[in-house]
Picture (cartoon, rainbow, N blue to C red):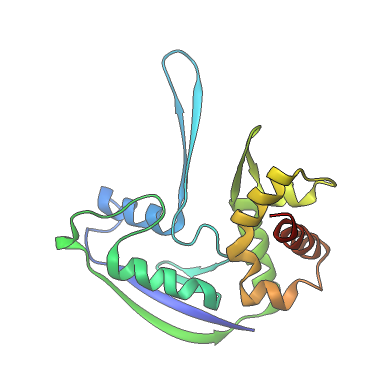
Length: 186
């Protein structure tokens, strides 16, 4: 299977100690923030990054392997600083360099990346956030759950990695069935 190896460097801040550097990685990969208020209530804020809803393989620091459908959103982010959760308003210090190389990806690595995405992607439902993998494992889904699943699973299901592997794994087969059922209902 094919994938794209991306090596990138954010030059907008000093590494690791800078808030801007941390913000860049949060914008790229997403994050979950848990806040406990003084009244004891806990709130969970889920912020998606550019790659949150795509399968990806983190090869090394500042290196990621992605399927072809993730390439355009990633390159757009590198050029503009815009992502689902944040937009870097001041682009005067925005400087990302990157290198793209097409590579072969082993099936086991792609399958692990897809499973990691299914565990990482949170689906907003009436009951709160549910992991996409957990939602996929349910025996029966309501029309609202199917609609939410379709929205959140779109980038995974449309990846060439998923399309190549969907008939070889029971969980991926089930996700594909729900994804298509949602399209028929909506």
